[in-house]
Image (cartoon, rainbow, N blue to C red):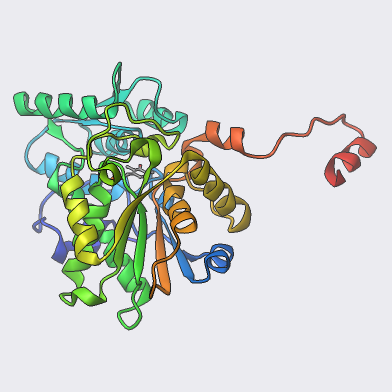
Length: 344
Ligand SMILES: *Cc1c(COP(=O)(O)O)cnc(C)c1O
């Protein structure tokens, strides 16, 4: 399967002959969730964005942002990150043969993401500060130096990420499109991108899905209506107090007749475990905020078919999984002991 820029060349701002930096991202599975559908009483589909090359949807935006940087002659890229942007930028920069620097909140990103960033050869900078401070600093840095900023404030990130909406429409068909999209919201680039993709696919607003955004309760500036100074949640990918694309997210929600709500860490973990143990899908905690939101706040009236964006792979954050998952049963190397251990 070709990468996104090739597949959607007519709907992305690249010309024939432009350099393309791709890892064959996109074309991710759209999986019917039997158990979750049963629990919610509607048809629920899961867009498995953890199946992208570096394990998160960030790759959709990164193929475009890094290709654009190379086209414009940049030899280095930089980003602030809660983890997945760093992993993705590092991989695409390695592929392009350019330098990558990532600034992450020190000690606050999931281990798998850190492993990716260091293996792909990025300069990983652990900031004694949070994501919002990191983003402010990289914006200043890229304004003063010839280094391309690949956070979702870069319009090419939004362009690439809008292709997830195209894939949903292709998969579900124009006859019976989805009624709503449930999605976690951090810096609010992804909800902005999906809405752009949907609106570019149809000019009949009433046929477009409602955008249901969910933030973690300890990092819910768009629900509270003001920035959060010290955002806190175990869903580290959405631990953001002052979303760069907050205004656009609120417009998308208003135009689509959707809503932004919050869910607690406890509710996120319940949804995270349910998906893994009942529907067989292992996503990271932040991704499960979309599912938790539907469970806690309910499915809006008139919505029969819904897609949850599962933004990142569960293996990104092994520590949370091992903490939340079942215990390991110690066992002597004898048949009787193994029998007792297997059957309880
Ligand atoms: C980046 C990220 C989000 C949040 O996306 P935004 O565009 O920042 O709103 C959600 N889940 C995961 C796994 C992410 O990596």
